[in-house]
Image 1 (tube, one colour):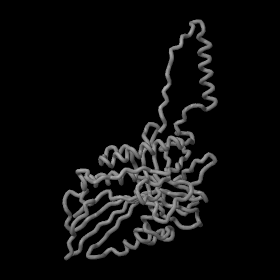
Image 2 (tube, one colour):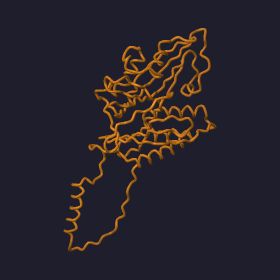
Image 3 (tube, rainbow, N blue to C red):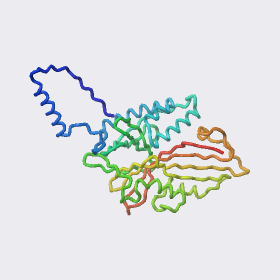
Image 4 (cartoon, rainbow, N blue to C red):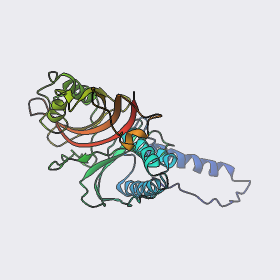
Length: 337
């Protein structure tokens, strides 16, 4: 975050017989600033970087400190100040679950920081602004992740909005950088990719729904073929499973140009699963995480709602399939019958 500059003002005595030269000098200074462009640019109509690497490091350090405070106190209000978007929705629900399952705060949450940061800073026009941090958290066995911060307007704070973590064996692609080292945002309706960033979530949910639509678009993996297989086996162990997969359209995708002309696309999907018991079986004990969202114990069915953010490597047309290399996911609701 940029630090506010404070200027000290001294009282200047101006001889009453010399007003015109002083005014002329003042107008001359203003003219120089106007001509040279040395004025503050808010980024509304000019392509600018929202901050530099030093300022981005400060934003990250402040976020880490406040995020650790959030989990030490299970503080939903503070969390809402520092997070937004899919990561905010997931963490708000996670904190609610923690308050339900550990009301006395007996479970200690280890503090951590986002280490080895590599800042991906774009030059964009208009608002919101954003930047990303490729990093590895400091907790044991952590895998690299991409933490994305957004700023809605010039007066708004920076908030974390996305945080997908790499799957084992995967890597984030190298972003394309311009001559000054800035990454490049890809518009949501960009043609020339195997799927536009705007359509990525809809393509995945269509494939998961029937296994036919966009069948050749996605590479095999835990979020594609393995999830589709679960949906093809609705009856198992005396229970019927029903799935509904829909794009989380209220979270717009974010796409970043990669070397070679492709894009790394972040998008969100809502996954709901209803589990209904078949007589003579009984529903059994409900998970504490699900109980956090329920007013009364269910008798015949449980529906859980999960929000998942994906990071997809999307190649140019004719250059391969979409790979879902990183995810972030959490239970955000549940209900029973």
